[in-house]
Amino acid sequence: MKAEERIGLIECLEHLRNSKVLVYFSYTPLDDTIIVPLYKQLKEMGHTKKIDLFLHSYGGAVDTPYKVVTLIREFCDEFAVIVPFVAKSAASMLVLGADEVVMGPISELGPIDPLVKHPVYKDVLVPVQAVWHCLDYLQRSISNSSDPEVASFMVTPLLNKLDPWLIGDYEKTIKASQQYAETLLSHYMLKDNLEQVSIVTQALTEGYLSHGYPIGRREAKELGLKVIDAHGELWNVIWKLYLSYEELFKAKEDEEKTTDQS
Image (tube, rainbow, N blue to C red; front, side, top):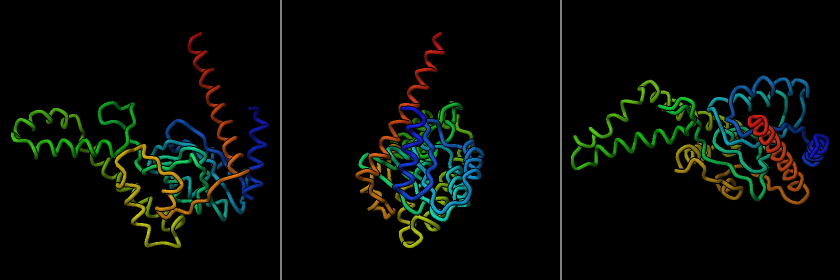
C-alpha cells in the first residue's frame, strides 16, 4: 500500500471518529525516544478537541507511557487510544490514561509488566515480574527443601549473580507501575468510577501470571475500562490501516535482510 493510501485511511478514520489521529506502530520497546518526535508532531498539529492514538506496541519502559499521556493531553480536550491488534504491557498503561479505548474482535491489551534489563545478559530485556517470580521460586526452593543447606548450596551461585542494587530497582519498578496505573486510572479512564481503581490496578499489575495474557475487549469491559466496540466501517478502516503498517514494516525488514546479505 502506498503512503497516499495510508494517509487516506487516516483521514477516513479521523472523519469517522471526529478526531485527529496520531500513529505509533512499533515492534521495538517503547521508550523516551518517542517524546521529542511526538512533541514536534503535536506542536505542528496545534491544540485540537480530540486526539486518537492509533497504537500497536508490545510495551517497554515503565515511565514513558505517563510522559506520553501527559504530553498528548497538553494538546487536546479528549484523548482516546485505538488498538487494532496489540497494546501490551507498558502500552496498556497508555490506555489507562485515555478517556476511552477503541477495540475490535482481535484487539488485545495485557498485564502491566514493564521490561527491564536482564540481571546477567545486559542487552536482553525481560518482564520485571519474571525476575521477581524467579527470586520467589529460589526462596521457596530453600524454604521447602528437606535439606535447606543443600538447596542453599545449589541456588547461592545464582543469587550471587544478582546485584542487590538491581533487585531494589526491580522492586521500585513494580511499585512505580502500580503508582502510574492508579494515577492514570483515577484521573482519566476511571475518574467516574474511583472505587474500581485499586481493583483494576491490582488485576493488571499482579493478577495475571503470563506476561502475554490477552485481555480482549470483553474482559477489558469486565475490568471496568471504557471500551468502544469497533465494527462495520470503523473497524474495516482500522484493520486496513493496521495491515498497511504491518506490510510497510515487513517490506523494510526484507530490505534490511537483503542489504545485510549483499
